[in-house]
Amino acid sequence: MCESELVSFVETLGEPAYRGRQVFAALQHRRLTNFDDITDLPQAFRNKLNEVATASTLTVASRFISEDGTRRYLMKTHDSFPVETVFIPEERRDTICFSSQSGCPLQCTFCLTAQLGLLRSLTAAEIVEQIVIALNDAYGVGTKTPRGTNLVGMGAGEPFLNFDELMKALRVMASPEGLHIVPNRVTISTAGIVPRIRDLAAFEDRPHLAISLAAPTDELRNELMPINKKWPLEELLAACRDFERTLKPNERFTFEYVMLDGINDSEEHARQLANLLNRHQLKAKVNLIPHNPAEPLPYYPSTEETVARFRSILESKGIHTYVRRPRGRDIFAACGQLAAREGTTISSLESTSVGA
Ligand code: SAH
Image (cartoon, rainbow, N blue to C red; front, side, top):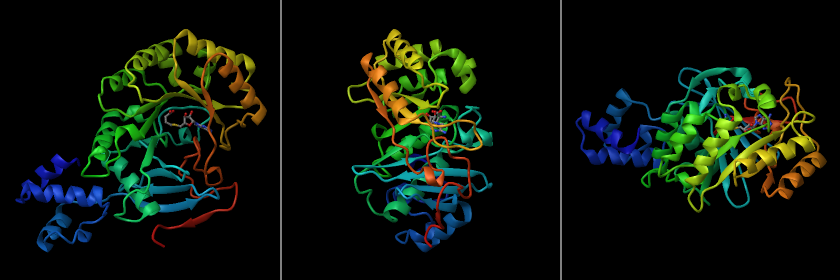
């Protein structure tokens, strides 16, 4: 609930408005996860809250810690659907990668999450709660986030197929009385739900946008990302172009391109991609993501040399290109590896329950 909803809620319980603001701050700013811990509330009110509401609904089923420090949480909703969240420690600023859906309805052939199908969309509360759980585990309950934390909506699911709950979650998290994670610290990635790209453009306070491309032609993209049949490249890039026109000075806009050995990583593909973006006069940066192992999917990451060549072709045509360093591959926490796995087959694994 956002603060005003919580205020109305406590009023229906016969409590004054300030109690609602107090509960919101306790759950969001102090990140407490049950009413009994809000010891500055009268006992009778805590009892009443316990009778009619729950402060948290997700439980952590397992926690995996990568050799690079990345943590993957496998959580369960109250109705037993998996939710995965990844905490990525970084030198300057940590990043939390959150999920917008349990499973995913899109059928991108290179992504493991697709194998789950859509289980269900997450509520705004569940989107926020997974982030609260990751923050508490990383920094401790109630402590300030040390260097500010970035959020990326790049976990399981297609965020733009859960647009209203996503935007509500971002509003709640932005509250200065709550987590105070403002949209400027959030990046949402979409496989290309064109109408929602246009909707996002109309928001004043909006997160950064990233678009998953994976192919420079409709023929190949139809194969790798079937959503392309609904919104082909011309429509997608026209929406991107319109979005780019509304960018504010500090706004980031990126294209993600997963690099699949022998599939989409030739010099010809690089030239086609550069021409496509230039023809649409797009200045957005390109993030190359070497494919993360996702057995049993029939793909392999492009070699380092291939990625470097691909990058230099894009750069030579004026396109700023970065190569994303994979994180947490050993615990199935990297892009495209979230498939609610209880373990891993790749390397050693530390699994502990939170608080243990
Ligand atoms: N559905 C959204 C959010 C998921 S983001 C979207 O498609 O953008 C996940 C990012 O990881 C996407 O850019 C996707 O292309 C990429 N990805 C998926 N599977 C991958 C894999 N196995 N290795 C590397 N990147 C992958």
